Amino acid sequence: MTDGDENATDRPDTADRPSLADRREVAQVYQPAEDSQLLADSVVEHVEPGDRVLDVGTGSGYVAARAREAGADAVGSDLNPHACKQTADAGVPVVRADLTRAFRSGVFDLVAFNPPYLPTEPESEWDDWMERALSGGEDGRAAVDPFLADVGRVLAPGGAVLLLVSTLTDPDAVREQARTHGLEATEVASESHPFEQLLVLRLTK
Image 1 (tube, rainbow, N blue to C red):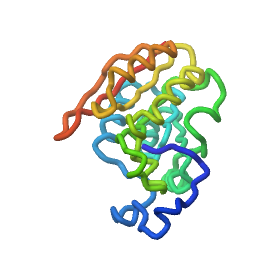
Image 2: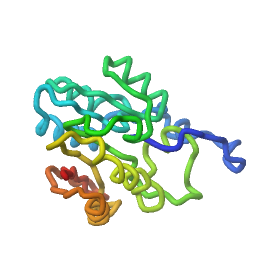
Image 3: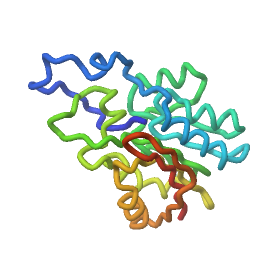
């Protein structure tokens, strides 16, 4: 899950501190985890061979690769150049793009998105790609809200969105925001974890 502002700059108050990626001893690309698995399983369940699928914030390309294994014509998109390289190296077509803005209208039968959803206070933000893959801003919906505002445009007739959300980000608020953009939400999968529940919402016009 990753997306965010393309113009990353070092902040004066964090310039001498190790990056979040260094602190966590992980790379700058979000790797498949429980949320990725839940979303990918839902995609496989809902996709048909030949469907045109967009995996927004593709990260490692895992969800897009699963869709391709199921016979879909799937492409990944991500703003993180490291993610784009890893996805391409895995044999998945990928476009460097911010959410759905780079794509034509009415193109995709299915759009999947595992957004950055962890609520994070501004003073706790770290300015690196892994932070952008995890942090959803103060309410956890910093990437979700702009995604919902445009995703309906790129759906083909009869198309759908599979959006992963957490109870940390107020799923009811996500449903209401989707409704304001003409999208109705139905829960199609869920998984409980110690501090949250993960849900996959299917959104249709």
